[in-house]
Image 1 (cartoon, rainbow, N blue to C red):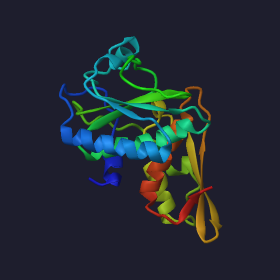
Image 2 (cartoon, rainbow, N blue to C red):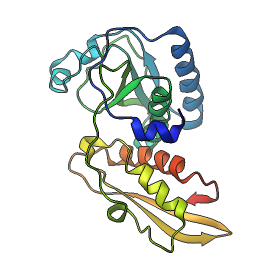
Image 3 (cartoon, rainbow, N blue to C red):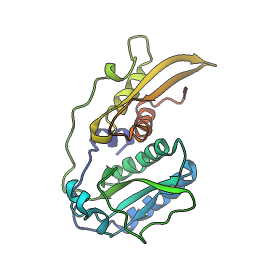
Length: 228
């Protein structure tokens, strides 16, 4: 499965089969987490066979079942931490999909279980990602149109529209899709694309933007552009 295919078939899953991840899959995930932690200056941690994080009151509200494996999304406090969490976390979400796993970004309905993770000085947890073998593959949700979130038109490059289409398939908090993409021209022979977050009372727009930007890069499949 390609990353583009993973984007198209991946949906949030909250109910999982009660079976552990295989050793081979754990190794792949651990190696990728280590690489992305270095690239994104993060402290993401894979927690295995630990049932308590999704058994509290909030977790029951979130309707989680057998969510015994998860990724703690953490890093040093910074203005851009949430965006980096979204961007690099979605690398893991799509990788998991290609490995036959299912996932769910979790912003509130989890419990921090002491002793299961480590936090360095000035680090914080931004969210969790549940991961495992889903009972189902999840369901589609209504999405906005390309025109609602971008300036894509007959005069913008075709890859720009494809990038926006991929971004529209990105998971966002309560499916809010509070982001926009703008093709702002060409500078030094490189296309310039501006990605912006919108306002939301719910929050998580910075994280959502990071997720959407990674989807855009995959859909656009074009290295001749810079984020403006």
